Length: 141
Image (cartoon, rainbow, N blue to C red):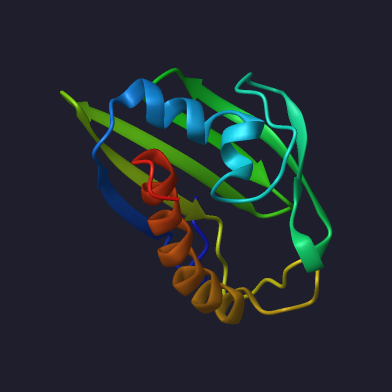
């Protein structure tokens, strides 16, 4: 049941010139994730608890909630958010979608900032992060 103050998820989509196996290895492993997003001790196992090293924001506790190898990885991030990576293979190309959900206009982050404000910053930030993923996957990093 979504609250009336729910804000829309952030969605970023990119077609990567790489097979799904390669993209999956970069978005679902700690080494891969560090190359385009943040250092972590992620393992693609449901229930795995891990830490995202969020730079100035410190360590964010996370827990893997869904794993469909080569297709989907979801995890809870901090107290409110869910981050999902979806992959759809098209031969040698892969459509990658990032979904950052759990935004609520009535809530504050762990750092006391309004979700609405943080969402705007993160929405812009994700654009560059997903572009970086593209460079890493396609070998231009």
